[in-house]
Length: 159
Image (cartoon, rainbow, N blue to C red):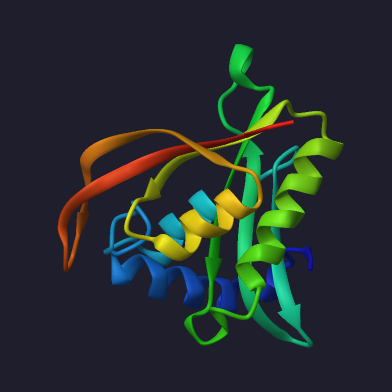
């Protein structure tokens, strides 16, 4: 695990492109361009973008920062994407644990995930295992390509 470097972008973009085009786990426009993805994914300090690597190969990536500004800036948020070939090997767990550690070290009061697709069972299970709880679900808020409209969970971990 390390901070994102410019040379990582081609591999990070490939992961983002594949995840977003699948349109089954992330509420981003499937037609998102590389420029749009870069603007959304690469956080500026005090936020952070990281990559999970094996040698020169990027296995997954995460972005993290304040969920909102002003009076809500004490709550962090994050997003994670793992290369399809690397799923089920603990990469997502490592990225999430890194985010939790970072958020605690930065003095956040907790981490909030704003839109976890309820059919993304692997993510929901992982987050719950790491202590997150579902605060609520917006019904039919996500247009899943195979299951139609499904809910989006709001999940939270308080420190």
